[in-house]
Length: 110
Image 1 (cartoon, rainbow, N blue to C red):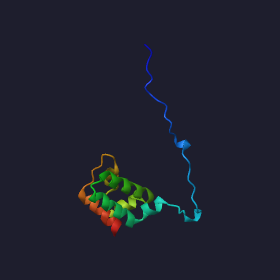
Image 2 (cartoon, helix red, strand yellow):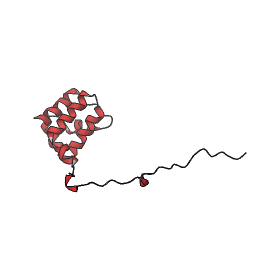
Image 3 (cartoon, rainbow, N blue to C red):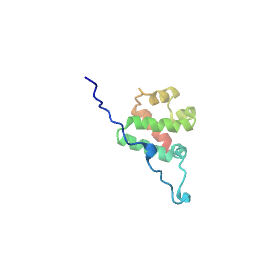
Image 4 (cartoon, rainbow, N blue to C red):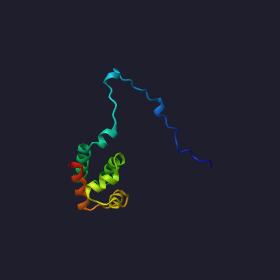
């Protein structure tokens, strides 16, 4: 008995989709995420929203992105935590204490 073909060829492809063009290119603005993630105001607000939403992974991801743009050693020293503690907090298994989180938020808001 021959095998029955169960898969059908898909008729959809992103290559077949029509591309849209902007009517007026002057309306387009370039967006640089590095500008926002280096701004303490936006970072502290985003971290606060992560705390309210109980999103620990989002908190660590935002903090990690912010610290990539600044000097981590200086930040840890100014926040009053050790460099080692800061890197442990940002690791996948990291579980920051409330004391360390408050020091980071205070440093960003001050």
